[in-house]
Length: 429
Image 1 (tube, one colour):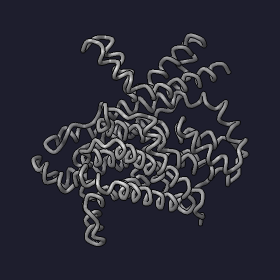
Image 2 (cartoon, helix red, strand yellow):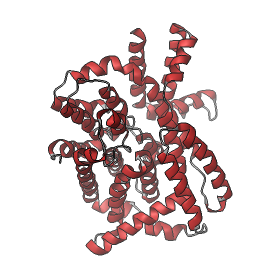
Image 3 (tube, helix red, strand yellow):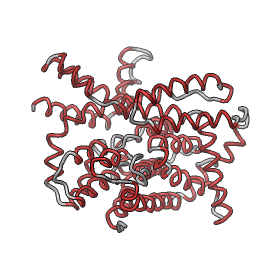
Image 4 (cartoon, helix red, strand yellow):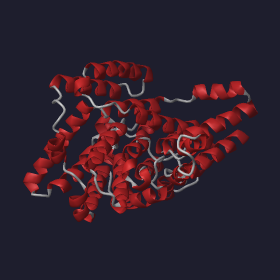
């Protein structure tokens, strides 16, 4: 039991560490460039390494207390499939053929809205990225949707308005968290319980999916309306970027199709690491062969995000001792609110997985747990597995090159409230 408490303590220290990454990076600049001290503080100021560093420290302590063999046995039993999948899907989706296809689809849908409703193009494109991009997560999985949407938004942004940027990423994180709930396989919190509880496509769509689609639309609309002026001044349109870039040769349809087939293969075998990692190695060969039509694959960023998620997963089992009793002691409404808040300090998929181990949960309590986990998935970087991917892509747009966790929380409050109200108040069919 002591090791469980230590696991919780180290996890809490890691969460606390995330609030000081900006200060640690600033502190690194006080030391001579390329010195050991500068390197250490700069490393500790990277949010992607926080949980991995604390997980390594905890495993070292575990090896010292329990022995090396038990620590290694525990680590061997941890399932790292999700971090590996996020690494692969981020790398695949960051390639130029996939991004060009996504951009063409967004531009096409935006042009249709623009002509039909006569809405301003930049506002329409941002709205479509936040809605269509997020809801696409129900088909291509949430990590893929986050990568594509974040990369598109990153290319469009040229503003330094912190209020706009924090509400933008808060809206994106919340929309991605709930946008994968139209199907039972795309959102990690639903995936963790769907088989155990018998939640099929019909159940998920009628109980969670359509409500989430409403919330995604409202959140995107609120953001666009709140920042009508700043959007016009601080964002490029995707059409403008296409004309501006103009230099690289057009990607042949065959190369794009091959990339899409690899992407589909990775998604289909998302729970079989040996398969999708093998596909990824073949994919890297394809990228090398077609390098004339490529931009550099985001391997470093993808690995850092995987490292971040791996650290969180190491701590997961050691939170059972306090989470399980808490879940069974709450009423449905309290469970919904509690799950929304708890998700901010623990991965929402881990939270629903623990709930799936409690046999006494009623059907209404099960819904409350999953709905709350989805609604709270945008409050922090650690709340939902795809969030670190979005953070990694967009962090350089923020003052100082990193996001303030408290400001991210504040930026996500309004879209989280919208999501919570839709998921709790709208009827199920």
